[in-house]
Length: 626
Image (cartoon, rainbow, N blue to C red; front, side, top):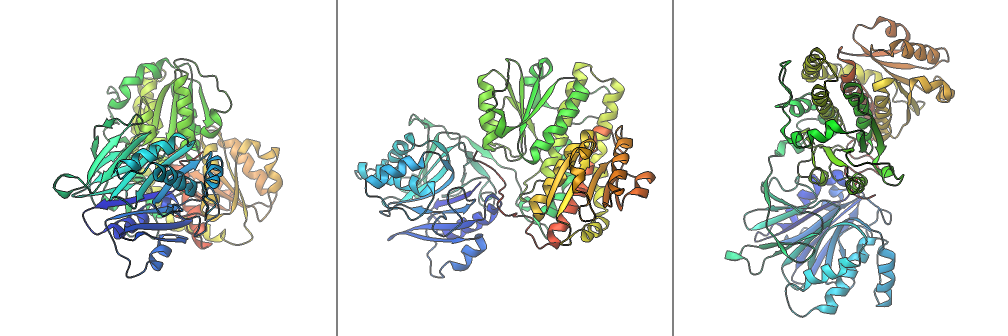
């Protein structure tokens, strides 16, 4: 949820590096922001509600940059957005400054013990409790040894129940300590400096050499005692044993996290979908009818996939809609039963998982806490773990036995667009490959599917060329009287109805419901009137006649209809108030096209209503707490 940035190095640039880094991470939380700089007189801490721009405006002009600083953008969990609840938190005696991403589940127990020790609190947060809990152990055991802080943190965390990524600095030594458990944290290694952050986006303009901390690992970075005056770093495990430095080269380009001339990240990412899908299929999709798909990272678990009696797919939010579509694709092509669950519900319903079953996890960030927890449970029961993620090196990617990176590129907009279509392309690739090896599709079907998938980027571009026409439709429905929308679809496009409704809710705050069109008469039709538009996802497929009938039922009750149809569809055009066409493609691939008009409709309505589409209220990009 929250974004963390830290800097420690020989250069006197800590303030600027942290503030710039927080700007890169603002998609992870923007309820409040703060920075704490280590000075000779202790910590200079500046905090505010709102985003990083608000923080920048209140920074004193004479504030020293220093060479050690930590910063934070918050997505509120404990306590409302306020200056007091904003991070960093400085401990009561001023010894410790801390930023934290995650949730301390037993913070009330720890707080009660600290109050007995005379501690007082300024905030409602669990994070301030953690800062004071570390200080309590630190001051009690301080003996002028530089490793006292790391020992104090280790002792303190033994009593902590929850998830966390933390950066800690203290007043006695030029030192910074980073620890993670179920929440991401990585360290960029520069020339005489280290940049620590929740992900790589704040780091890449300083260095491409990055260490991804694993769960229960602690990084101890010190300016004192390093070779040639450079900072010294050690990675320690839970047993206090040194872990070899595993440095990775990051290839992400800075341009991928800039707006590139677009007004918003969301619009940029909608228009990046043709290239993003090309990146997902590049090097994997072979067009010859005889050649197998080239997916080397999957080969080690292909026997388990092909023998699976059942495949579970778990996901959250937009990724759950991708999972529902994936179920239809896999069952249609491979004839293997697929069960789809919200990750947040999966482990609490005691699912029947047998040895040899496959658990497929779909996650944009690769850090979703509910998904990770479900994976751990499934692994204990003997399931093979397969991941579909966008972020290279993320926790879910590391936990999985095998999987596919979508390679959709960095997605900054909180409401997912290109990551969603990348997930659809990835699950389609694995389903086609499995079906070929299982013999559940003919060679002709196999070749046709591959050719159709290869054409999807071009067909996406054709849909995007209709932007102005789609915006004109959206403009008609950006009025106060339209506060409820129905999204209706059947078969593989029912999840697109769910996704379209979610997008509108996320970015415009207008209420919308997605429903199977065949279920419309079982309740939702009661909502229909001239002020409740219905959006039909109605490509020409085997459900076409049924959807056409549903549309007529809406029109008979005075409802307005927007229809997403296959190009050249004359029948729908006679009934619907507005028609948006998509190119013809294989039925299983239509969701990658039908979703795009819905993204553009939601975007335009939200902009017309004055909403911040990149930073919807109450939402954050990476949900790293349960």
